Length: 225
Ligand SMILES: [Zn+2]
Ligand SMILES: [Zn+2]
Image (tube, rainbow, N blue to C red; front, top):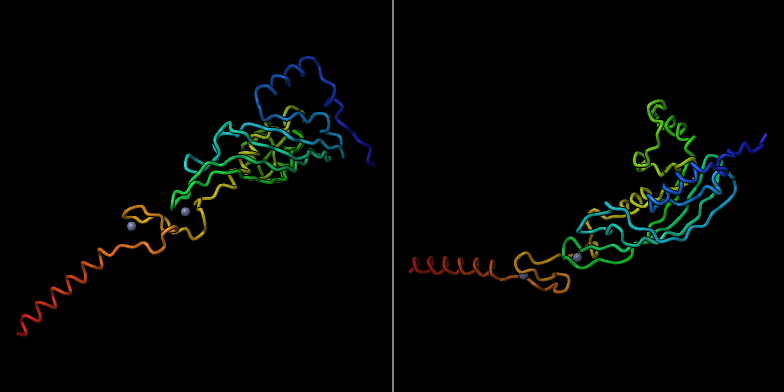
């Protein structure tokens, strides 16, 4: 029997709750209000928004500057236990090739499909992951790193995209940023870019060897006489 036992409280809030939600939304710039569809299977909500980049994506050498703009588009689809969020985020990466220091700054886009369970279902999630349900009543979004699961907050009222954006972009950061897979880097002696000057090399070492050999040859020739 598929009678919807919808949690009606999701769209009937006391003044206290409204106030709490309002405060929450103002505390986190990444909190997206999804309360109108969470719990309503089959409903969708579009998202097209510019959010500040979370901190901790990459590093000074290659990364995304905290608070710079991230354009996020996508849609939330309500399913039985929560929402599915399918989206794309684009941000400007600052960075350099780790071998030749070429500027690699530019836009970077990431795609994601994540499950955002209602708070009530996190117990099932914990069970599935073998975490045990008793000690972990509180939802901790950070602990779901790598699971592609980001529980809704405030009884399904908000989806907080901070961890999702951080994880999605962090996953897209190359361990060794390169301008091209076979970047030749810089000459260690004088810093000449070997990609631009493939013929660049130094004779010095070879010259010394040859002159040493020439000296030896001259010595040997002198003995023979
Ligand atoms: Zn390079
Ligand atoms: Zn050189």
